[in-house]
Image 1 (cartoon, rainbow, N blue to C red):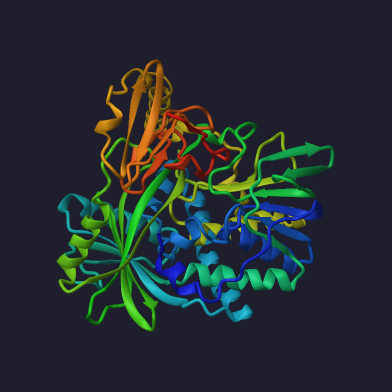
Image 2: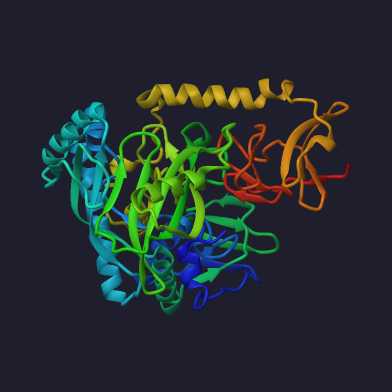
Length: 500
């Protein structure tokens, strides 16, 4: 699977060596996405000795498969923040993300990073009469925070709109070109980057940490977990505080001139639009059809639905690429940024971006680097990662607990008794053979891959993903390939195949 970001950077992506000896640094950063790379960049610029440990390649996961929108408009969010927390809280959230847009622009200009950065207005719109009042309320809430949001009855794209809220001077870019540019800066400032280096454990030893890979280790005073979902189960209890969602994106050539602007609608199915430069041509990105990872649903037509949406706007659209990604969502919808837990001094975490990681990653990098450098950050309190307030979103918390209990207990007694012969090619089923419950995938040649469909994270039962041919965890979002390879955190252990 390739996004236009991965396709457009294959020719000049640098490959970094695997960790081949034990080392000691000031800061060990686990995870080479935009958060880890941004944090390493800021710390290396301040002359700290940093290293990044990435289990695959830099930007391979969420960062390389994002829409690349850089915006502080995270849905109809500011009325929610004002009503749920306070006006001051909402203003600080807005200011933090607006500053992130400026920070990213300044970094690009300072470091001369060619990443197709463009200032664009962002719109949230609706063509549903029942949603118009929500748009108006959001405009009022945002303007009360001192930001010039605009109400309109139209958007730049040829889509019916009864109402929209416009955030001016937002931005978009090629996310991989951006972090590859940051990586060059990191190495120039004596930072270390290691790919294909999977972390298996982290131990606290008095005034330092030891981060363990397969054969070697890294000793450091500070550790930053930037793995998306934290790979450590205890202390922070993040498995009780958030879940993961997956979304789908296509890039198309519309064979027509495209307008400026980025748009997203208010009502399910959520659909996001933006343009991008690809092979010296402006193309359209259409994303959406979000769902919780591991849900029992047939998502095999997600890309077709996006293409149908695109053709309804631009009939001559031609598919260029399709991809999907996932991100963590906290129960109160605010990212967790800061200390990993009250019992893990000098360990930091950044997660729960709710699919708005381009700005949130910069916010996180600033907060975490300031904490390590001993600088007070005015926004750190609203993203405090040691908070635990499920009551802020009691319905979601209840649903997550129900899903966890169901996956751990109930569904294990409801697996249908299919036979191996009934499994279609290029598909999988959970079946019972004697007293053993197995998940079995059959490839196009009839070869079988059997495993226990139990997540190696906390033991939830996995569900089959028809679109991606993966085993997905409905509790916390871990994902495994059909052959058991661990793909997404929080799981770090692969599932062994079973002979049948």
